Length: 358
Ligand SMILES: Cc1cc2nc3c(=O)[nH]c(=O)nc-3n(C[C@H](O)[C@H](O)[C@H](O)COP(=O)(O)O)c2cc1C
Image 1 (cartoon, rainbow, N blue to C red):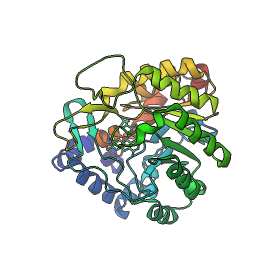
Image 2: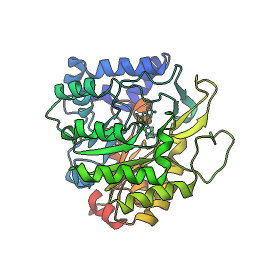
Image 3: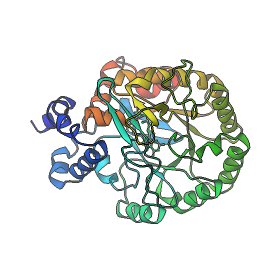
């Protein structure tokens, strides 16, 4: 009975209609409050964690209980780690953390595309800043799942300073050079600057690095924001630099720049179901370049176990979700993991499938 409340069906029928009547950022605040509520945590208990050796895998040398991670942006200030762990994730990407506190872009800055199960956001890195985030991280020590911290900055020094201050708090780092909503990040699409960043990080780091790259598309459309868009060659140059500097992982990809008049900034990043097919195409292309030298994390529109297996078949080792958590609710990770188990052949496990396509 308990677990019925946690199923996507219950969430979609009773909770989501209420949350979706409210502005998106307010709904997320309510959802976070609920997640941190001790009574709800008691109901969740360990009900959403699927423990099955067939699901275990590995990413950038980190052992994962299952392949589903929370994508960056949901817990920007690292305030909900303990609550989010309970949703059954194999790992959490928290952040994006930046050094100095920022308010981000003016509101409205998130739009729901309800018919398409998508979101468009133009948050622009709102952040409490590194000092407050370290205090938040100190409160939530002793995690049960691996933590990857997403960090960024508007120049190399900011990223390096950020990295140095939080290195001990994470199992790995994801460097976000790809938010379409933050002026200044384009800097890192310059190969020389990106290389300098990697060289400097390589001198000091003791943790694996994952680079979160921007997407490209082969389908031209006037709805895409061409002022922020990247072409395939640019992305392949970034990938080349990652290979040269022995970066361990890539997250493919960040949101797709798109125009939308309901946002104050008139343009933002598209996520959710509409980006899924394009994300697979990009992984396919990049896998041909990197082979098994760099691990790939699939991120974009994943909402089912079948989606995860499709991503693995084009070369991913693990997956991240954000928008499907908003649309399907707290039971989504369990639903995905159970579907993966139901789709695996009797003698297969996830790790063997990953190595088959590596
Ligand atoms: C509201 C919102 C905020 C986000 N903030 C960040 C962020 O701070 N850093 C980052 O690297 N990606 C951020 N993302 C992008 C997600 O991590 C992810 O790459 C993207 O949403 C595609 O995955 P999905 O379709 O499963 O949502 C954000 C996405 C959304 C919807």
